[in-house]
Length: 166
Image (tube, rainbow, N blue to C red; front, side, top):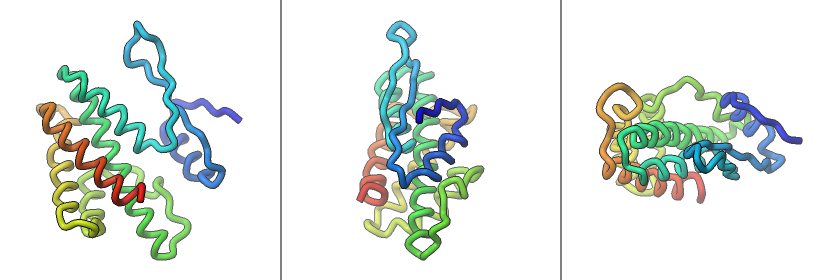
């Protein structure tokens, strides 16, 4: 079956409800109209957000950096939700889903997740740095600089590697 949607909530719901089928998911991107659409296979919206953020950071222009900041913020929120769901499942709540945390923003999510980052004493501080750096990036404030976004990406990749892909 092939399902095409632009509705991110539906996409997340389908991925969560049917994860036991080991679904293949794809993202269709139109980053450069002269090259046409690019279809990227991805198993997880977190990884696709990280990959997209990295591409936008590499471009370096202000609008791309703003998009990168937004994608990193979304990826960090997804990371937090996955950590919280993992904790609930470890505690025996098999009904826990990422969608249970829809509508919660990074500030609230990161406060809940920081105490769960116990594999290295630096991890809670890295998550706090990411939140503080990215908060203005998805609003009307000044966009974080290239180096700050790259640092956030590096920290988030390490956190994902330790807490999600372990």
